[in-house]
Image 1: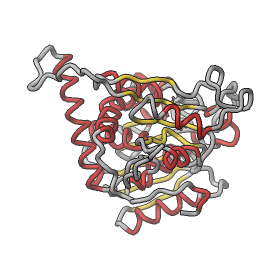
Image 2: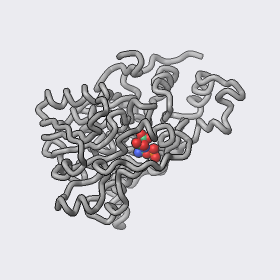
Image 3: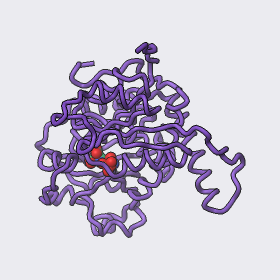
Image 4: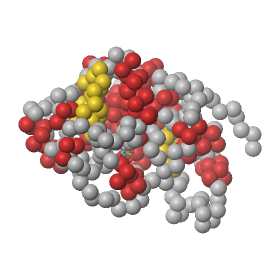
Length: 345
Ligand code: ASP
Ligand code: CP
């Protein structure tokens, strides 16, 4: 079969793919989708009601790890745009995998004939990159092993802008294992609008992931005041705190994969409770990519600080913006070519 030359910048595989120009464009699109949703909810007519779609696009999700928000978020976003989605990587039902022996190459070359865009989540870090090279369709990395989760970073930046304003004016804290993929993409993406202050809250004896170290160095070179602390209380004077579990090695396989989650408790300095927020008289906006573990106590949910479910809600206009842009064929201009982490690129 004749394959076209794949356009440069077709895929969203890493936060590196996104330039400042792309970020401005995607934020504008997401804000428009949000405004339209709010107008519709308030019963107002839209200035330009969307025309019924005669030929909807098909979004194929290929997920070999569990997901609630990313999979349903892209599916909901597709539906809101008048498109449709198909689940294209159900290992129990597709022919792919060891039982029937169909190769990933044949699977992708089949799925791309049914669809217009591929969304891939995998425990294999190189899979979204392989799919991006195999297919002429645009590909979104929806989380690859311990590498990246770029659409989550766009959601997080959109959520912060909506709930606290321009990132450049803010102090942002992150409490997380520095190997977490959402955290890597988030800190990498912050370079496009460097905050005034960035504080990492992490275990005192855990080695700093090189990708996180590099992203923090980039921020420091752009003028962000960088700090590292080892107690969540020291983040409660920031404008925003994004929090997740501290030691993924205990949970990662279960949390990201398909097994039961170990219920081991997060240690006290890294657990956020309503008591700590109230004692600090903190108005810090709390975000969490979810699912949460014991790092974020449910007592926080009723406080005005709790932004994590609004973050989920805001992910739909952002994912609509991502799909819209990529289905229009608008390239990501941050980095012309993306390489999987193992290639050293
Ligand atoms: N759900 C997100 C992910 O799959 C964040 C997390 O679980 O830590 O990466
Ligand atoms: N935030 C996030 O990626 O959630 P899921 O793992 O449920 O998709």
